[in-house]
Length: 343
Image (tube, rainbow, N blue to C red; front, side, top):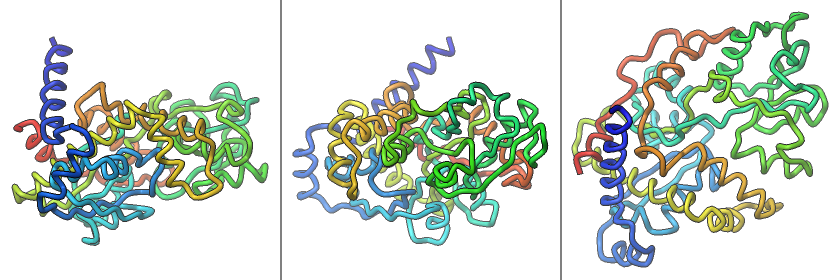
């Protein structure tokens, strides 16, 4: 019964988004754009054209945003949630740890839709590390800034210390590129499934050269890219509809990435600064991102309550310095999704 209900709900949301997007040829979208006044909307993204953001750029290039009456402007920032909080964007695409931390610091921003249904965060290790227990005594490179909680929760789960103990691991801090691994000072480094193919290609390697541990697989993943809006904007029907239209356009872009992954990779090849990876590497990045979005399997923008609860629990408890001190209240709004379902 639950599966049937979920299936009907998925069908209703999919139909509503398709209706909003009016998914016809891009040429028709361009004709509409020329004959209608488009509403500007500024979206803060975590990076420029990449596997992680391909859906939004395809939606823009294909005219899908114009089809739903929007004229998007993308601004790129390390932490898009902070750009939203400062009033410099109308929406932000960001990982939940960053967004909840920004909210905890006093910003009235709220989660309104979830784009990545799964986490792409992984730990890439030397091939000699065959299973989690082999991490004992190893040097582990972690990103700073809020996404460490998944690793700390995993170490607690398998009983390894994180303070350099003989029966634990030693933590090293790194940036987004695995520099410490290249310098041989670490045994494992942090990565994302959609970024690793490109990073490793620059070294003449692939993910097959490493042992990959997925936080999603070990049960300690935190939610990644979702859509965040200012709480104030959710008081006004016209602004809610604008966000709903953005979701419609974005869904069409991600559907395009799923349906025509090779064309999406070719699009990225045109947008990537040299030295651009080969098309096969870009294609692997697109596939990895598509696997996280799961655009054809469930309602676009759906937030899994269990995944949300797990994220909050990890952010509240993961040692040594939990990102959150108290549970977030009112951080999630279903106002936009209800507007989509009502169409």
